[in-house]
Figure 1 (cartoon, rainbow, N blue to C red):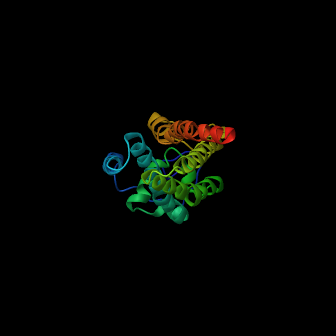
Figure 2 (spheres, rainbow, N blue to C red):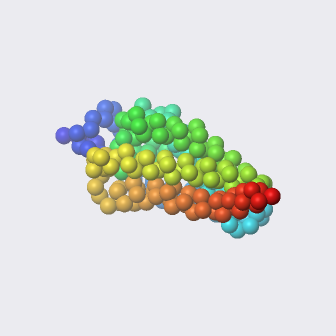
Figure 3 (cartoon, rainbow, N blue to C red):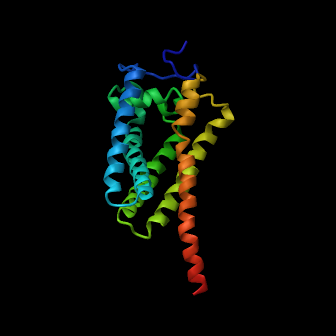
Length: 211
């Protein structure tokens, strides 16, 4: 019998230490931090750029901080994550109910997260800075970062599909809220941003072609 709450139940997690904080404490704390971050970032950006640009700036700054902060923590501590009990480790162990691959250094997940931290994260910061400075290049960086977001998120979903999502607890909270709900924004929002970028880039290219 497994001495942990994760799926599949046959998974061996040596030195597993349960979280000391409850799910309510973890989710409430995360919600509070995210709300303060989003509101303060949007308020800051809206004093410098228009509303839509402020939303795009907030999105890319949030994504960059998650990639180069929260996900960087996973890259640095993936080998000992199950035995750690600091706040970030507890958040990862809570999320791992929806994907236990994060608890045993799955090579594909580790590779995907490494690309996200080292490539997509910096691109998000570059896009945010370009938006805040109102540079024309903002749409190029936005396009590149958004395409990579859609690709990485699609791969993340597809990689567990052949197993019937065996690494996810079948409870609706863990599958629909954690696994689907917490990741799908990085499919939906990038799709809208790709449309926004192409709407700015293509007319310019057509004008240059006719000139």
